[in-house]
Image (cartoon, rainbow, N blue to C red; front, side, top):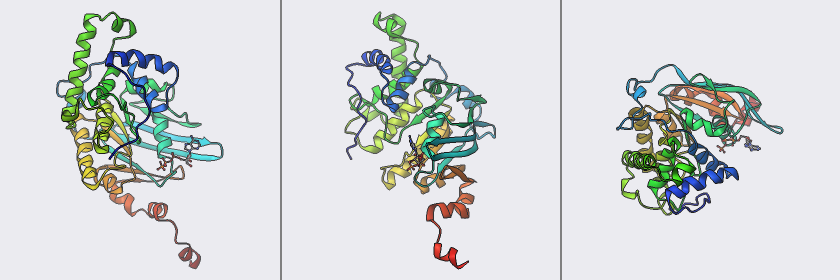
Length: 325
Ligand code: ATP
């Protein structure tokens, strides 16, 4: 299946991309690209070993009850529309949490607050005990929060490997000057980035398409490339926006296994916005349900599925039955 991808500029080489992308941030690109480019300026930090595991995570692969993310009283209004109405919940370290709700419930607005693309009128968000609201969007990746986008934020003319290298570049030290002077350590750093990107491609079963341009690849493959790019900066928390959209039944099954593997092998906590109930209920430890901006339920998947408020929000109220009461 051919996919429409965001329009992004063409770059001849990765070095050119690194220089050009810094210039492009100045003219304020579209938001998904802004996010990616913001990541490019974060300093290099070696937080993974050869197996791609964060050392501190290797010690604790089980779910801890310590919240990694705390959303408190979050309120966002667009004119008269209350997109989020005093929403509070925690995500424990190592959990997979599903964030669900009918169309317009406020899921994307919440993700945009966590990514600092939106600033709430009230409330706060703490990541590892630190408020996110004081930070600009490009610092979010540096803190250890990664994100995938519903409509993919890839560079279509770059190869799969280069797209993933962009994610790893968020940890580089090199800048305009050191790149232009071709300092020896820049070459070594570039080789490390390439190796790290190749390791991620192997992890996500993408080695066969490493040199293929992103454009023209099947949608399911592009979703995995997007995951690889998001994992490249070794996030502790991954925000995954509708990963099952456009996938067939078999691909959704593979995605469920993949998200679990990312949590178990990489120790990444996952907050998942998804309309595919089968996927959410299968892999989530906890589910948070929004409706018209309010949190209407929270709990284990089986509890949430039985909740009358959730059933009402998804199926609507039988008005005839209501009138008979
Ligand atoms: P979907 O599942 O359809 O993506 P959602 O749960 O992600 O929906 P949001 O996109 O967060 O819902 O929207 C919540 C409400 O806020 C909706 O009524 C939407 O129209 C409104 N909204 C979201 N973004 C904006 C905006 N930038 N300007 C005005 N209204 C907005």
